[in-house]
Length: 449
Image 1 (spheres, one colour):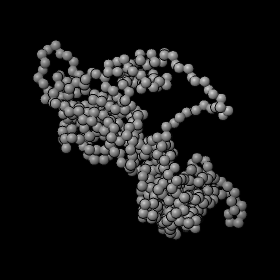
Image 2 (image 1 turned 90 degrees about the horizontal axis):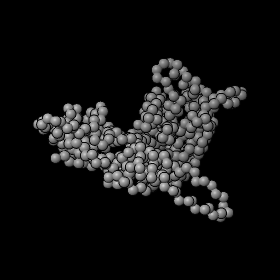
Image 3 (image 1 turned 30 degrees about the vertical axis):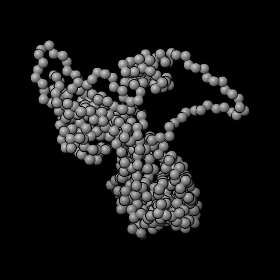
Image 4 (image 1 turned 180 degrees about the horizontal axis):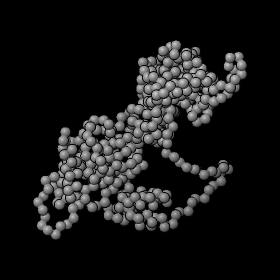
């Protein structure tokens, strides 16, 4: 007999407690194999595909796209362990056999996978297959097929807390601002039908209460945007940074003419192109080797400053989902060419929403190039629990005294925000001055290599 297994939203790691359903990858009635991704969710750190540890037939889904679920909430139920089916078509039997075989191999109770890319390595289905009830045959029923799937019950399945299965009904309610939770459905088992929504829309609306003039000016409420997901995580992290870290900022203008000339010469020599960000990152790692106080964090419980041996360099990347900070691990051991390639790879993943949570955590120092937005300066907020962040403004032509004469040079403003608990202004100024010296004369960096 088939057994219905409930698959719950797993612990996605990194302290995440909830996720939002972005896109369902399977529907009720689909055949799934062990470790096949069934849903794409967005956490506060990244979008990930969640694989199901059971193989069989999807009998129910819980939550619509856009619904936020806590860890441990049901995602889907899967019927596993099929043995017979009357007159199923060959494609269906083959798909069911593959799913049952996958489900019964190994541990037998599922793979235990959490995210795609972790745990068992099974090949993924090329496309989803739906179980179709067999058509009635006029001839006597053929012998029972050894491995098959029972037809999916025709009763409606609730896909979430609201008893609605028609996307047209949901869209009609959403477009008219109607809360489906306030309706009682007239369909089987309370299913909300289109006629229920239309009847609610035709019903007279209660008159608005008169406004009482209290002497204060009245203004419309405007749009309310939920502070959740990535935006909520960013808000919490920035607020925590301001609450816990006594930060200070220092800045300096630097002549970047020689740095830009050096980059042009490197790229003219052939090979992969090197970005300005990569050169600045290489300068940062050299400066952190001289001033390790800024590559640290404060352990409040132990009342200790923890200096870190490796530089895991975060960098700000603007995406459609908002500002993200991917992390280049062990940046101190990478060349400018390798850094440029890694920045490009992580930026592409960030914009595609494919960064793993591990790509967004573990940073020890952040480089923020806000010059791409056409601004000169800023006072960055430290990326908690790091100790410092270097901000880089736009590089533009400005009048500058060079060699005792006024000239037009390429000038950039550099700003360093640092945790005043880990060092004093002298250390922060020394770090920033070394960065500026390398920008103005790249030979300074070469001397220390």
